[in-house]
Image (cartoon, rainbow over all chains, first blue to last red; front, side):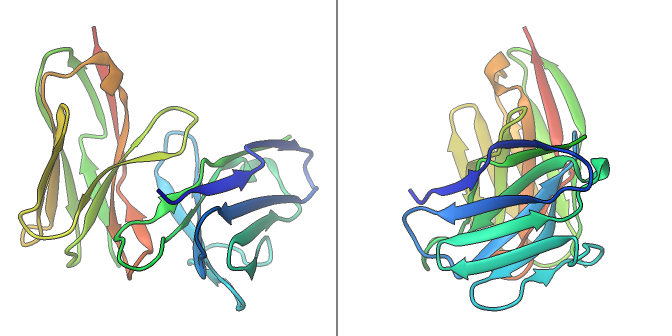
Length: 116
Length: 110
């Protein structure tokens, strides 16, 4: 089946630094990808929709200047957490819908971000 | 605004017992998804329910969808320890944008 990868799987950074997380669709093209955030023991919350070749669409309450999304190719979307702070520590999961006709999307393995 | 609620939020059950997890959603949808999440891991797809009355079974888990009642159930039969995990339902808002339920943390006791 379709596979979505993320890199890195874990990252620890100091407060105030920026961190980039990559999401790749490995065997299909994805014009749209989604970024979710999950705090410990909570559900997944959609942060933004990443659109290839155009601006991302952010959910209400998500700071677009803090969470920069770039979807530069049909197989890669990146999420950059700028000036990270401890409250940004979370599990970030991306997803991508597969080629048409399949009514589900595929989730990446997630990236655990810890900001010290 | 689409809201998706699950109950119970926590479930501790003995091995061999049966139980049902409920997923209610607030607006019309003819699709619903169930996922399993183990600690520190991403989501594992369990069931894709695509129409009213859909019922799917895999091993000790069975999922159903009633779109008129806006309700899906995940039934566990004769639970075993390996089923301990967090279970999420998800409802699409638009084509692929998912709204996740609150999650049900299941612990099966030996």
